[in-house]
Length: 97
Image (cartoon, rainbow, N blue to C red; front, side):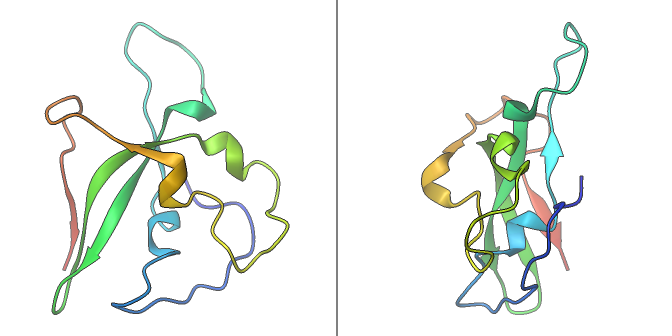
C-alpha cells in the first residue's frame, strides 16, 4: 500500500524516519472481511552496510488518511506503533539488499 501523500523521500543510515512509509501493509485475519486501517503493519527499520532490514510493528494507518499538517514529519512515528509478538505474523522480518 503506497503512502498516499507527498513526502520528502529523504533518508540516510542515521535518519530512517520516512523509510517505513515506503512499504506499508494491512493485516486482516481470514475470519474478517474488509479493509480496517487500524490493522496496519510497518517495519521498524535498521540500516546495514548495503541493506535495509526491519521488524514488524502494528500501526494505525488511519493516521495517514489525511495529509499531515507538517509534511516534513512522518505521521506514523515510533511512539504510535507497537511491537508485534514473535510468531504472531508469518512475516517476521523484511530485508532489502
